[in-house]
Image (cartoon, rainbow, N blue to C red; front, side):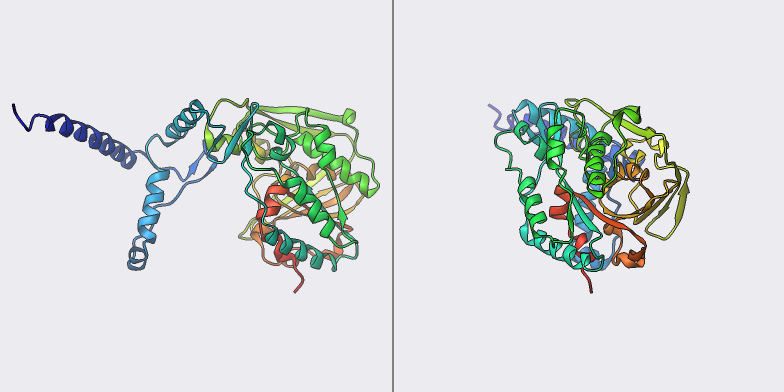
Length: 380
């Protein structure tokens, strides 16, 4: 009996394994590299620069590891395979995304109330500059509105409790625009995307009706709005994390009506470059992976929309939930300005607060609870 014979299969298995790894590495090196993943809807890691400091601090090795992981051959196929295997294993949550009755919902971390308190304090400080012109709208996400469809072991959805906490902590001269009940009553309608973390144009319309009613305006009735189903193939940010076909593609709707018309939209990017458009719906993005960009385009520090409505001026301090909300306001305000605090340090470097008859902070609840950028609003 040859004692070395059992080693042969082991050697062959090892050669086969390392051969596959080597082949994949060669494919990764040979295939052209992309800076942006259309399937995952995000920028990919860049090759790290080698330097003495990067080498000794492990920055280079960490960067190389991330680069290799994100440019691995057939990466999107592996993401889809992983999702399918985990779903077959009975998992209702994959890569921070919950599967809830044909809908993808973003996993919500526990609310950090210390962070929330700092944000509320900054808003109250900011409100003192505005003499009662400030309002706050915190929009629940689909994970809260459809909490009863979430898996039983998913974390408790705290958004409703957090929203009430914030509204109760605001100074008395700051308006609270509570849209939770209106959205919950319409939960059977198409108010949130199935594959993306945003609300739909109809969800934004419901919030718009609540907001203008508080201002004393009449919202444009739905029967006077033309709804164009501009695309039926939108696969959004949550789909990009799991690459599954379990959720039906979403519809991008464009709402238009008679009356006031948009004259122009000017966008200022982080480098100070200004681009001008003749409308708020950028249809070229209907051909992109991220079709939500149809509403105002990519996020930038400053967007200025003018219309012939003859109304006053409104400043919206926003996250991306405002992108499909703002077009409705052009029927009531001749100037609607949107500021994204992620890109700026001091809001008064971009706008003159005295020019605006109203100021609205509009954030979704998940972003409000986690993002500290609103704390920049604190008066110095």
